[in-house]
Image 1: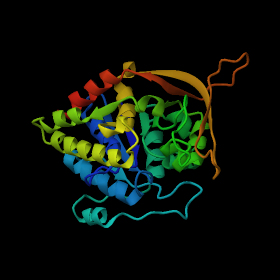
Image 2: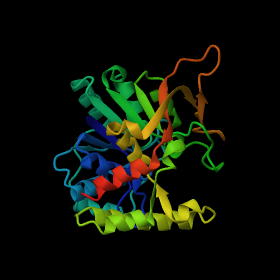
Image 3: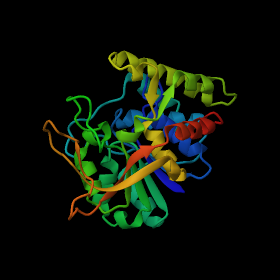
Image 4: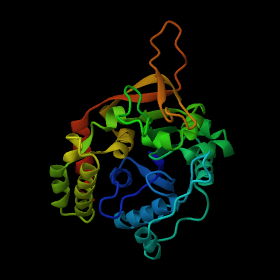
Length: 317
């Protein structure tokens, strides 16, 4: 399966978010996936850092000539809110290959339109690049094989008023709305299932003990991230000893559809600056005259099967 991975990757320094990096590693490790292109976007970190850190991780993984193209620096309606890389990340510019020239939205359009029906977009950050690509070429929706999105929460609510919508949608709800309205074949892998797939300290030790080049780094990064989120969320017993693998699950369902059960629903998203920014409004289509479905969303997951699939591939890198 040929894919474009659109990511706000932040994995690098100790204590940084790891799941985008693990999604990239899983896509590389899975023999059923061909990684054609990586595009970066503002989200977990600024887009410059995401691009630098993707280049560094690509070097660690030995991705060779897979192009990395920098994308949107800000959300669609917030072009004035642009962040800069931290000094320790900016310093890595000298040690990683520069990104491929160009713009992510253009690269997405060109690659999909050159291979109609063949390319799956796996979007694991805010959907700014994809929405911009749709604005450039609305026929993208009919020519992409599918888009698989890590984002949203559909059957429950977020635990805090500070971020009423799931992060990737909350950062750029207008972009999410554009994708939902595009007619693209789309599957959403949201927090309803991703919070159930977790790496523990014991899983991290399994990676640390693997006799392969990448896995020990992966184990160290996992332990550092668990420590970070445990300190950040002292009231959560779950996050004291484990971390969720949000983005890798979106990659895993490409070749392991048995891991997740999807449900056809009608979804909209709250946009703007109000207190419900980024909230997904889900119609389960159970009424007499239901609205047309515009996407499929993940409803259940086999967490144990995912974890074994993930560890078996990552420990071999």
